[in-house]
Image (tube, rainbow, N blue to C red; front, top):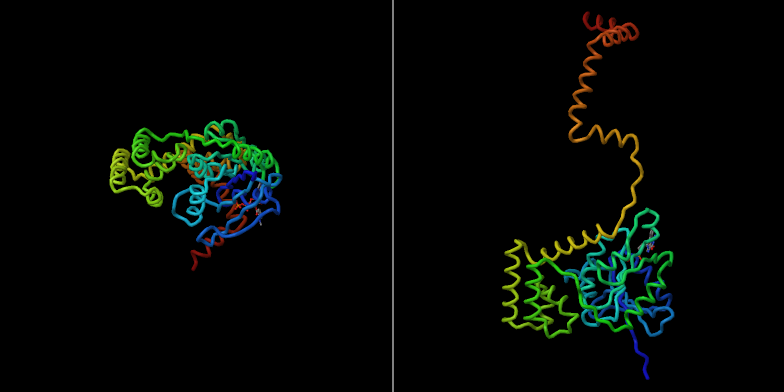
Length: 330
Ligand code: BGO
């Protein structure tokens, strides 16, 4: 009997450490080609110790919108090929930016393991990432790794294999604000109810964002399109923004709440003396009174007995009188 094959896609932002992780997972066991119809490099490799598991290295991307070649290639692969699991590598030193892609990947109905990379740097800085809180907030597996040092990589790979082989099709749990959910529910009913349940939400969100590629792929009728447009328009009027911006803003609100709950930043080094002085002198309320006091002290010194003494001394020592007389005789 032929062995069942599994595929795990590796997705992440540029510079998140994807290449380093791909090399650590596959060793020299890789082959390189081009993605269909484009010259974008396609890399695959067998997972070390698992001859039945292939790792597909997707292009580095920030989101799954249809605007760049890399994003189109990555999302077409995820929609059409539907890998058995996704390892989403995120840069732990820059979680806020990296989680934007994560929130979209977990909507695809494919099991996701978030590998929080660069943990060697995070730990050195004293910051703390609460992995179990992150797991709960994202509703997917989360593990910490350092692709460069090799720590946690094997454990993360084994967990991803377990997810891939489980055959589970996760139903996305995160919800947007009420009026968006209302529109999404209508869109699901009108346009995507024929798709497998776990794929409906991602497609409905893309249709809400007026993603033309997805509308074309689903071969929607004019009647369906105008029905959907009515739902989107209603929501846009209510929230006074365009649909794509509504989704983006609400994703960032969600990410901000995750960051607040899951990251504890270390107290940064004590301020230097000059920083402390700057803080007082440039304080919004205290700065003007301090300036007036300093000017008064300068005036008092210049005009009082101390001022006269200093002026006399300057004249005697540096010949001020001679200089002044010289000027008068000219
Ligand atoms: C350079 N920890 C640390 N400290 N660094 C890591 C880790 C980690 O866990 N993982 C990756 N890096 P890519 P993409 C570099 O190349 O895999 C580093 O774009 C340098 N190069 O070593 O390329 C990794 O594929 C000179 O750093 O990411 C690499 O996703 C000086 O993160 C960078 C400093 O990794 C990006 C770093 C000439």
